[in-house]
Length: 205
Image (tube, rainbow, N blue to C red; front, side):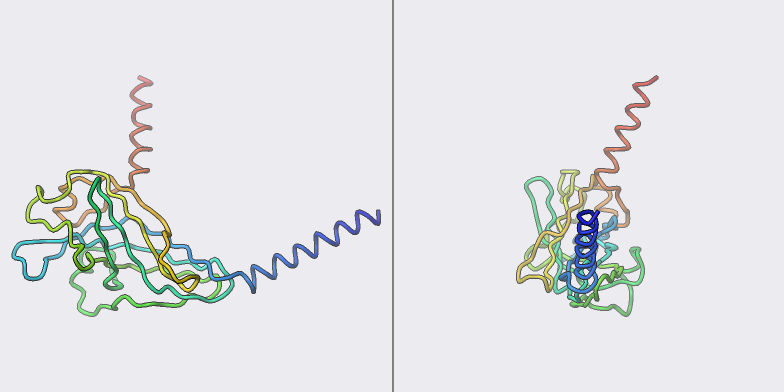
């Protein structure tokens, strides 16, 4: 019995230490969870009848750590087959719709802090960065023919000095979606699951 009591005491101490670490000592630990984007389009300045893809994306930023920290920068690397380009956040939006492109008062994207175990929800408008303005398009034929678009989210936060890959999304997107500029595509994983389910139903007949 004394041995069993000793084991129980040790386990209780370890549990207390673990609880103390998670409550007060765990470092800033940022997790971002993006929702499905609206692939909107915006005119390219100085180029008549030319547009660029400007996604509007709802994102949850959550600090799984106990200590405070900050989100300093956010970039998206878009990949379609053998093409890739970079998107940067332009501003926070009030509405999750194409009307966000016409909001008169915009909050320019800026670094922000998160307290321990805090989470915030932001709608972010992204624009092509610098020379990475592809795909610029005047017609559907100017848009990549590949239907699979991969969005890799890179974040710079107070946990380290370098950008790191935080998460990734894949979408099956037709050219018409990008050209129209106001549709929300389903994630590729969701579409594959639906296709598989429908296929199983057809096979059962």
